[in-house]
Length: 461
Ligand code: UD1
Ligand code: CA
Image (tube, rainbow, N blue to C red; front, side, top):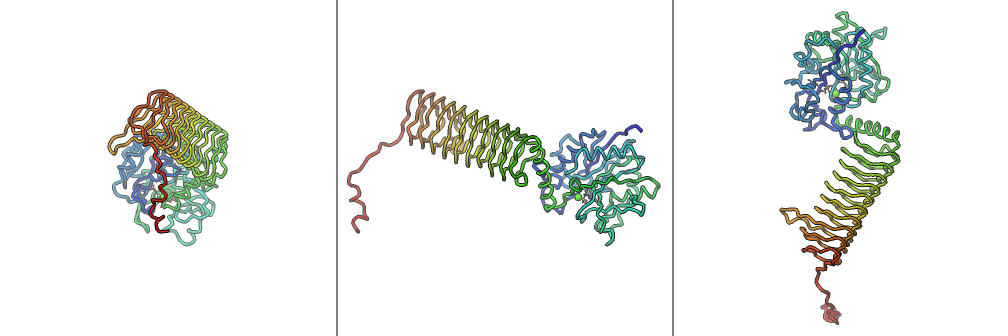
């Protein structure tokens, strides 16, 4: 039998009221990626002839997020999943292929699972193949009602189910492959005579069966992929499960995770072999970490690039680029556009923002480096402040190679400190320091002799 075109419909029009959120449900993140993105990324390798997302509540936000990765159809009123699918009729009415339907709130499905379902449907001669799963706790899901011979009869929603039906553990995952023409034909006959007064998509199964068509179920033994996220409790389960899935892949790739249950690595993060990630670490966004590096507990790295053999100790790094053999922290903060060359050392309580720091330079302790270009082999002493902001404008500082910035220097930008120049500890540097020179700018010390005797407390004693 020749394979038919595959269309995909993603349902994302519902208001997700159980989330109690201003954000449309399908835009909530699971492991740093919106649920709708998980779904679209899972279906896109199926090369759909048409990919249609049904939007309604929060349509603008959902469309802006998804962009041109999907076509859209609006469901003006949320009258149920069957009604939602019906809105795609104008776009799909001429398709002689099959249509995969799934919800935007089921982020765990893998492409292989969906591809298997499509392939199984294509091989069979049935009107619809529904993906089902055995749930430990089926509460909230539609139940698969089978006849004495084991064949599927219909799907009953939780709210409409009898006491006996509620005991059924086989649930509707909300993923179906339909013969496209039979789908839209059946949808015209769906009624809303149920507890929720909605037009249920699952009712099409009973309708098709009664019209003499074959309906089939493909059962997953592992429930994990079937999770539907209707509230924050399920969202937490989805996150936990997805983080474990991601962590497992990193471990198989050679990354050492000391405590994978307490390690939070977003989808899309890349980590090299033999890198060690300690408990409580969060790695987010478009982050790439090299090989043989160490990220210690409590560190958070967002949208950054980290090289090989680099150690990040209990530190925060955002939108920054870090080279090889760098040491950072503990308790350092790289804010956006920090660029550290190889072998740089950033010590405790150091903040770096919008600054390039050259190879092997050291910023050891309690320092702020902002809007600066710092050369190679520079040493920046404790408590140095790059004073870069007058309340309105940011000013730039340049520090040459092998310069030595004495402890507690205030560098009032804009200023240029030359190669092998020195600033005396405690200086407030307002002018350029030429190369090889020492800039000293501080009040001279005076000692007042016998001052103790003039202290007021002395009189009283
Ligand atoms: C649905 C199924 C249930 C299944 C479960 C799997 C129905 C009636 N029930 O229940 O059998 O076990 O999914 O997770 O289909 N939506 C619209 N327009 C609407 C209503 C819903 O686009 O008018 C969208 C929602 O945005 C959501 C999806 O359809 O993405 C499913 O709706 P939801 O209300 O979450 O259905 P469930 O109660 O989870
Ligand atoms: Ca749902």
